[in-house]
Length: 324
Image 1: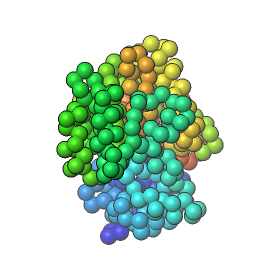
Image 2: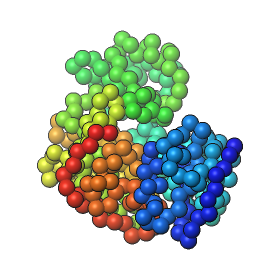
Image 3: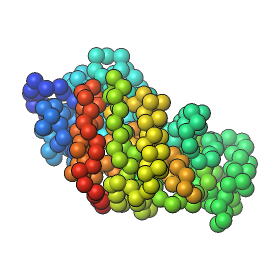
Image 4: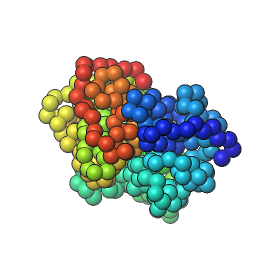
């Protein structure tokens, strides 16, 4: 840690947030009316939260010592992104500071881990193959998968299991491109999937407290442009039956993961069927619409959940749409 700006916390709980981006800023804004004091660990390049939160520590989320020292100053440790040092969190979990969500939920950001866990639990996921690009039979495996699952244009989807976001770490390739790609690729294991025909994409926001209380918002419809969420509609323009199925999947994931806090289940609708795309183990960009359109915003709810306070109502105050 290179510099610290500290203010005296009041009587309320002190929540520490690792990461100083826009999600941390919105969490801090939601904390004030709840009487919660927010303290942020931000890198020098973070601007969103530092502009509005006077109580911050400069340090990297990749710096184990920075996280461990920061955690000593707060009651509950949370995050505005999942790319944090796992070894440091493991050490913090053995102290009096609560880590919420815990390391178990943050590990679900690994797409290979997600796919395997959900498949074993019987949750709906696309066909998939997990492999290391440098294993001897990687090309043979990829070609066999492509032969079985390529779409009409001959394409399959390859995803880096870790580190990808906003369209990064995702490639759509034909079988003739696989050899060159695998020869050059170095990184996390790959997840291979079919390129599905999509009717639309959905997001289910779920909150769960340590005591097991669960709250689910009405299903959101998301419009993706170049791998990034561009528009959100609340409620999603789908049938009541499909919405009920999506909400049930969200609750099943919450219980399976024993999640704490707010997280998002991103879903594909392909040929009328729901499939889990991925999990974001934190407050989510699609949930910005809840700030003004819902009885409780995702940011207020996340704070309630990680402090094990009663969760707020999640019904919509009005139909809404936002551009993210």
